[in-house]
Image (cartoon, rainbow, N blue to C red; front, side, top):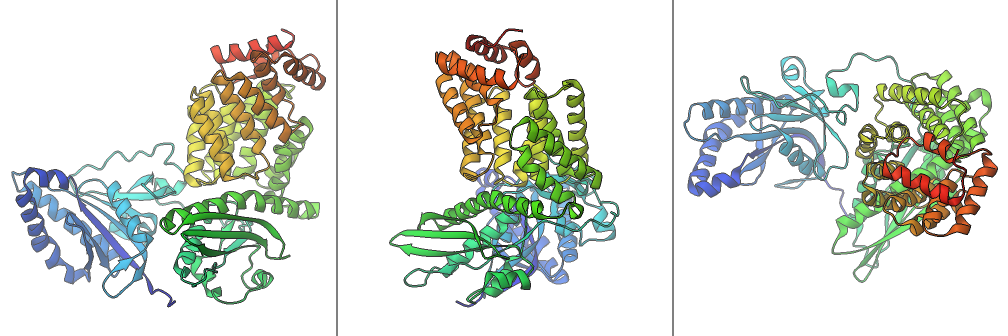
Length: 603
């Protein structure tokens, strides 16, 4: 199959606001209006800017330009002309939304295709009526007055675009811009507030490099090559949002198409550490995609999986495969990277390595491991005091220390945890792990979950496949009085990463939701499941004890209390009530009532 011709170009997407209402009110009048605008304001102006229309949609169109400056100047002139036209008429105004993007498109003889076309149209719907929206990539091509005319709009959430998009808005003189004060969820990076200042030289990016190789078409007729290429493109785009790794660009990876490749040679040629490879095959109406993750240095297989779909819904199958691989790749790569960090000599460990070494201790949920994690994170902060990962994970560890009754000074640790979370937030690092850890800290230490939800939802906006964020979202929803929604988030987390080493935490979350819903037998079942996954997680015996007692399972409840007292002699209901920060009112009273029924001393 011939390689499709591609080109980087500039696209302006335009659309008339409220066109359906104009048609309903005066169909022929609206059509005459559109034709008049095209004849007088659009067609005569194209020659000067080298523009041409590539698609029309009745109430709008897509226009291609040879440069960013041409596109911006033409669109500004058009919107100014439209504003003047509207001001000179006594009829209802006709307003147009416009968006300008840099677009990597596929060329045919008479048309243009590609994901960038759809992206331009999505951004156009977010533009202010009568104004223009541009992206980060367009903004940084502009200099002088055109650049200064655009105001930062923060990060936008666009339909069908699975990541936040940084945007700038412009309106004709005399027309007000929408409120551009960034909301907390928009303030993801310093760049979202304007042109960033010069930065000091950044430390080298130590994240491992991965490549998604072209998938093999093993169908009997070898007629699903285009589908296989689409799988790889979607997977590469999805993995590019996984913060734990860097991904080789699709075009570079496709130079290896139809070439026999030893993955170990890729480690030498491209510097990659991990390789995703796979195949597509068809049987009847069923398409099966198989993928595997390989360590490029050793050739060892770290993970493999497959997904089936139908020939009638290939786009959904491509999305599902990309999500499957992204969810499975993170824990597999994380485990491999932790093992690498463990093998390094102590005097060669960097901040990144120390954070990795702390993780298994962090998620062990044992007192001694939590102390070890805090020590490693302290070393990481000595190496880099501004590490968002080290700051936020240390805050999370301290919050665990408080709620699990391991702290000898809970108020001191609480203040330290909140200060660390605030410092991590100030780094504005667009890392879903950092955002999740900040959110988890606030979720554990504060009864009001609003602050926690800001950061957890930001983590999911950055990477919808990050299972830890979905787990913490489930807890925050449960503590906000929405346990039914919490159950859905926990199920999403488990589906995304079924082999995650902290999946037990999602089981404990399901138990928490079932408890808050008054389903005490189910809560006891899931608390037991969590303990099967992490027997040393002693705090979960509290949830097991209260749930089992309220379900009438007295023997199980008293056994759980004995385990709690063996770990923490002198533990009381009053002590637990003081340690629990994120439940209050009737839910907390019910929780403590169950502990009393289970036989835990009052105080």
